[in-house]
Image (cartoon, rainbow, N blue to C red; front, side, top):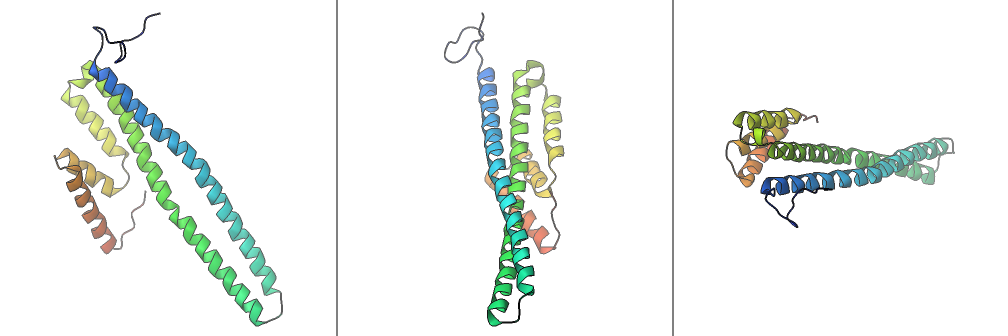
Length: 181
C-alpha cells in the first residue's frame, strides 16, 4: 500500500499545494457539518413556533365563544400579541436562511478552490482562475454579495469591501427595495 506524501511523512512527492487543498477541504467539511447540525435545531424551532401559533389560534377561538368579560378581553389581547411575537420570531429566522446560503457558497468556493489548486494545468492558467471567479460570482443571488466580490477582485481589502457592501445595502434600504435571496 502506497500512501501519498504528507506533512507528517514528507518525501520528494510532498507539496504545499496538496497540504493547502487538504486544509481547504477540511474547512469546507467543518462548515457543512455545522450547517447540518444547525438545520436540525432550526427545524425544531420552526415546528415549535408553528405549533404555538396553531394553539394560540385555538385558544383565541375558544375565548371568542365565552361571554364578554374583562378577563376574556385581556386573554384575547394576550393571544393576539403572543401570535404576533411568534410570527416576528419566524420572520427573524430568515436571517438563518441567509446565513445558510452564504455558508453554502463558502463551502462550494473552498471545494472549488481546492480543486483548482490541486490541478497544475489549472493552477497556473489565468483563464481557469477567471472562469472559477465568474462561477463564484454567478452563484450569488444578492446584489450586496456581488458588490463585495467585485471590490475584493479589484484589490480592495476585506475591510474596504465590507464598507462598500454596507453602503450599498444602506442605499438599497433607503430606496425601500427588498433584497430577495
